[in-house]
Length: 210
Ligand SMILES: Cc1cc2nc3c(=O)[nH]c(=O)nc-3n(C[C@H](O)[C@H](O)[C@H](O)COP(=O)(O)O)c2cc1C
Image 1 (tube, rainbow, N blue to C red):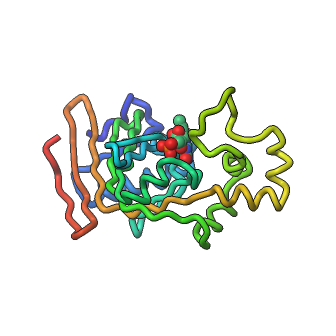
Image 2 (image 1 turned 60 degrees about the vertical axis):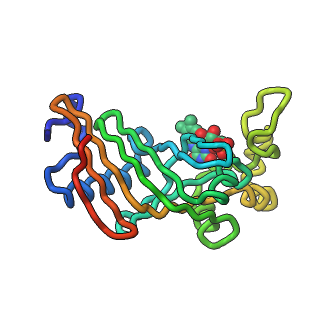
């Protein structure tokens, strides 16, 4: 079980026969995913509930608090997912690390931050490339008569202008996710290993039948 997945010695597997060590390894790898562009945990699928059923989309993992079990992602405050999370704050975050053959499923309670110090702090640390995404004059999902890249032509000047920056900042939202439980699944040639780490309502960790 300790063999490097795909026999690539640079890819450390996330495995252990000890539940505590395994949980630490999962959180460590999530935090590492934020820092590495091509890491399997850099992006995740956010599954939400809607009045009509379920919805899902890929987002970038922006921050992880391994001690308090929180993760954060960014989005446009005008998107469907924000409306859905306001109505149904629980969501599932699904990660698949193809190189390590590990799936993580995080059951979370979300909280929206738009005009508070948390959103300000994330906006301040966002790169110019990320900020560009919030300059769109169109509400995401609006029907258009031609393709549109998501920001206006003169966005480079706007990113530098204080006034335009403030209007883009209004479109920016941070979704804070308090992790209620994390489920781990490892696929290997010798079989599958599955475990659940529950944090709320009470802490519990256990192996599961795959
Ligand atoms: C690789 C990748 C990364 C993405 N990252 C984000 C992101 O960090 N935040 C975001 O709101 N949308 C992101 N998107 C776009 C979303 O998947 C989605 O199309 C968009 O947010 C609208 O979703 P909604 O209508 O369900 O709210 C990303 C898409 C891909 C393919």
